[in-house]
Amino acid sequence: MIKINENYLKLQASYLFSDIAKRVTAYQKDNPTKEVIKLGIGDVTRALPDACIEAFRKGVAEMAEDATFRGYGPEQGYAFLREKIAAEDFQKRGADISPDEIFVSDGAKCDTGNIQEIFSNDITIAIPDPVYPVYLDTNVMAGRTGLFSDGRYEDIVYLDSTKENGFVPELPETPVDLIYLCFPNNPTGSTITKDQLKTWVDYARKEKALILFDAAYEAFIRDEHLPKSIYEIEGAREVAIEFRSYSKTAGFTGTRCAYTVVPKTCMAWDTKGNAHLIHALWNRRHSTKFNGVSYPVQKAAEAIYNEEGKKQVKGLTDYYLKNAQLIRKEIADMGYELTGGENSPYIWIDGKTDSWAFFDLLLKEAGVVCTPGAGFGKCGQGYIRISAFNSYENVKRAMERIRKALK
Ligand SMILES: *Cc1c(COP(=O)(O)O)cnc(C)c1O
Image (cartoon, rainbow, N blue to C red; front, side, top):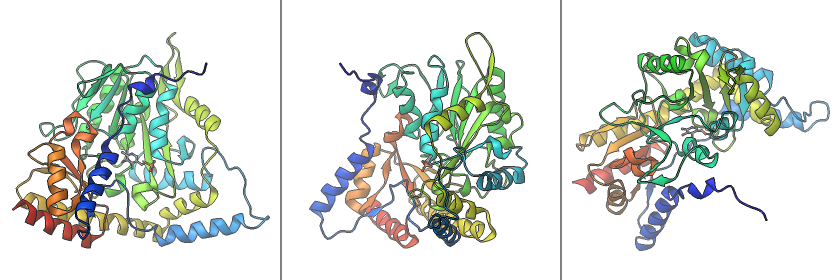
């Protein structure tokens, strides 16, 4: 008899986005003439930069001729892209990362979700709350948690991100082995300083733990004092894996290209106490289960690093940051406490009431869709997330409507 992986039964059905969709559909049915403005999504809205499109087209043209056609590429990514990544994203910022420590992939979602399988099942895991759900759910599927009760899984060390700690979690009180961090953060939009990040790196070195650093939103950082990469922190090469994605950086959510950095100095131990290179394990996993990102897509990603590409990516992220600035100003002006939106496309707002109640209020009174914070974890209760991924005109109209509705 075929049997299931019963860990899947522990998963909480993710009602968040289907619940939102249901409520929006019901509202639209009752108010067929009212237009709804969606500021809830975690997806970009603007087209790929011209530089990427041009390179993408050239890549496709090469695939159309026998002479330049390419079949399977290197599983880890083409050297032309990995060399640009190492030089531009890391070495230029004083982070010592080499091309052979980079694994190009089809997404940071897959990588942050898959990485856990190279580690033992009896490690202790620390996960922020609120959180991007992938980190948590993939560990549930792997059987590293107990049951779900009272809003949380047993056997996970939750790292509370609250107003009190400025939405940057403090070190855990009990020892942990694997730590997920994401900055600039989804959903809170908070950022971490170099000193704060150093505290985590020092902790990991002391505990022989590993940090999984999700930097999917680094392109939104404008404050030059903030770290874009964890490798800007001394000692991080020994204890950190970093995930990057072109999704939010350059509008690649539908095109699919990302990368993971695994320094050759990161170690993990077997039960006999022997040390192993995490790089070797991940390389084995990656080349066994993944066959590379398509050539035209990697060409499109490479174009992000040429002069035009850089300018256009800056233009794209500036556009969303301008939206974020407007949202921040308007919402604060209405008397709400908020965080994020300065080096991040997300604004995290204390609604001073239940998350879903505030969601309903904004939908019904203003025709604006946000994301209820409670959907990202227990600590998200009472908050909503507003995303800057929309047109400036829509954001402006949404803010005017919210202002009227909350009067
Ligand atoms: C959007 C997002 C990603 C990017 O995922 P892709 O699979 O590369 O599109 C990664 N991490 C977080 C926290 C995100 O919000």
